[in-house]
Amino acid sequence: MAVAAGLARCGWSCRYDRPLAKPALQALEWVDPAFYVRWVVPLPGNEAIVNQPSAPEARRRQALDAARATREPAFTQAIELLQGGRGVLVYVPLFRGSPA
Image (cartoon, rainbow, N blue to C red):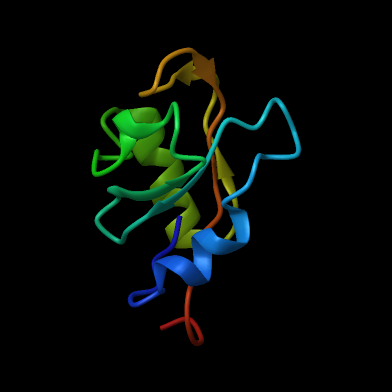
């Protein structure tokens, strides 16, 4: 999750736009401050989640809110993924500047 406005897409995705090294890792997503998935790599197989809300249900929203509030990674329990299958989401907040 990124809560920093203005992060250039290539500055983020160009670093990760290659096959993921861990087979258990399905995707890396950039979530905007309104909690919508804006970018995902790799895109093939994950197209369904682009521009979708990342928090359509309470467990996801709780983890997103916790990551934003604590500025620490937050995890969900096993859930149904928007692109299919089950998995665990890890939200890692990114901020610019010092805490307000």
